[in-house]
Length: 96
Image (cartoon, rainbow, N blue to C red; front, side, top):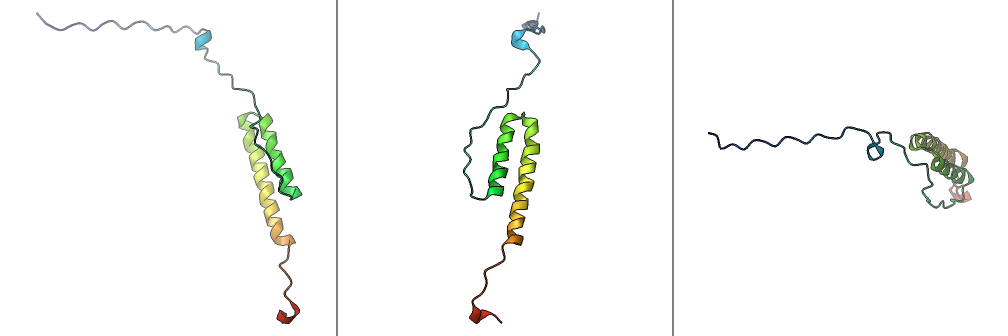
């Protein structure tokens, strides 16, 4: 005689798909984040920052294109600052 207690039988699990177990995932609709935009005073930069609002109307997989576009534009704006603005003119007594 063994003093071993038998293991209880596992309860069968419900494998039917019902409203609470729906396997289809419906993502939430795009919604604005409500982040305020503060103008920088530089029209090119302000236009690019305004473009970020386009991501508010796209699904998440569309954000990357907007972010990369804005990033390229901001890099271009920064590069143009180096080429457009020459340094200050030295006073007459310091010129060679």
